[in-house]
Length: 452
Image 1 (cartoon, one colour):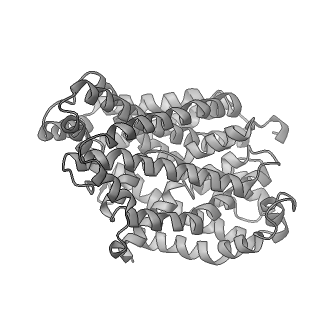
Image 2 (cartoon, helix red, strand yellow):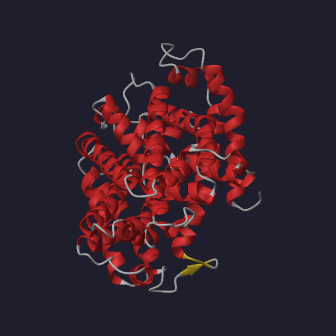
Image 3 (tube, helix red, strand yellow):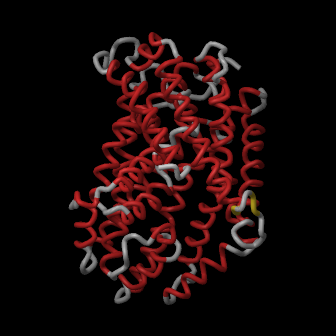
């Protein structure tokens, strides 16, 4: 398949919104707020931003360089960049990792759709015990979670089969502004509640005494996972970039969008939580157990407002999840499309079927069936092998390759767009990639394993 037949993004805004959408997901709207709550609020955010510059942006540029230089799917991109040397496996690792994540991620995305439906149907009204039992009953049932999960993968499939420009770029131009508008509406509603300013202060007034080694490690991990490093997503999307695309500028813009949305998510959640006296460190249960009760309490005097806010919130989660699943699906689709030389629709079906199988097994392991591996439910197992092993290893090998294995002239040419931009920054970037990024990724890896 020749390069001319490959899809490509049609505009700069399309590149930014699509690639930002691949990074923005439930990790921003769900994981970032509860991580912030567990780690001291504003102080955690400041440390997180430092690591975005030290690790996130250089890590993104690494994958951008490989993807754009090769204009191929992730496996072939690493192979072409290394001129036949055995780096193809790094791309294959990313493709496998993203497909597994797509499978179990679709389960949580399906939960978001169920909660959106339940909000519309008014099924989430009740006390805290009712909301908790509602989630436990739904997530542990057999059929409904599977149907929502498969439905979400099929929704993603419909976008992917339309191609890069007519599918991914077009839907990203719709979803990302929609996500931002929903966030702004929810932020304004949350900040207007009585006592909400305590939540705003928690988010923006740093208490540096709360910065501990655990907080630093948590911020480092969040900066790594928030931008989808090590999944081959950024490499795949960069293969659709034009030669004129400024890689460093794009990475900075995407990181800023990703961080702003994460902070807005915190600004949506914490004022409402403080308003009703809910602890900001409610953990992963925040979205499906804590927040439905928060919405009811916060808008008890205006039930119709609480009803609308609940609908908008779960619509926001569904949109955020979809922007991520689209990118994860595209990684495998591009690979099968180019390597098997099959039509794009057939390649997409291979990924869709695989993700549906993983999603169904993951969903059943949450309670309906006792599906376990190495002492963990299958969903926890898939999460473990991707987050603790595959993503850090893939990102570490990518950084080592760009820093030490690739020809410096090629890296320089891609980074500077043939010497037209950021020539003086290239030595700084190369130093970061050779020394700082590998150390930070190794720390993430060891921390995920519980060694440090």
